[in-house]
Image (cartoon, one colour):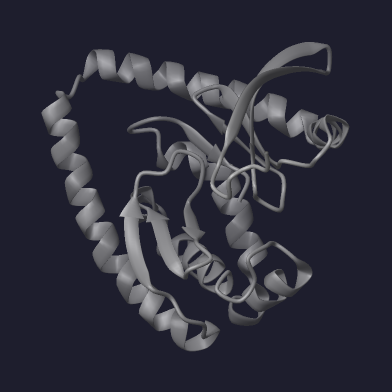
Length: 216
C-alpha cells in the first residue's frame, strides 16, 4: 500500500562518527530533501521515503565534525539551562504568560515584515501563523500558508528578515534548488551572512526554553 501524503514514519537508528556511537531519530515522509536538526542533545534526521540509508549516512558522515560539535554544545546548553532554572525557577503559568507575550510581539513584527518583503518576492500566501516549532524557524506549505517560530522575535531584526524572505521565496520554489537561492539572493544579497549567523546562534535564541538547532 502506498504511503499517505502526510504520513511520517519514525525509527531509531545508530551511526558511528569519529569513533563515537551516535543514536538518531530518522523521520521519513513525502519531503523531497534531506535535513537534520539537533534539539536538547538529540539528533533528528528528516528524509524522503525513497532515500537509501547509505545516502543518509553518507550525508551525516560529510557533516560529522559539525554534528558532534553541535551535539556537545546542545548538551552543554541544556545543562546550563537546567542549572539556571534550578537557581531561578519560573512556574508553568509564568512561562505560559511570558511565551504569550513573545508570540504577540512576534506576530505584530512578522506580519509587517512579510508585507514589506512580499512586495519584492511576489507570490500568493494564504495566511500567517506563529508557532512553537522544535525543528525549524519557519515553513511554507504547498497551499501558501506561512508559519514562523515565535522565537524569531528574540533574534536581531536582520535575522528575522532573512527567515521571512526565505519562506516567501518558497511560494515560488518548494525546495532549496539553485533557483530558490537565486531568488533569496536577489532580494537579500547578504543572505549567506545572515544564514551563517542563524546557524551559529540558534541554541542561544532558544536557551530560555529548550535548546534547538536548525540546519536552515
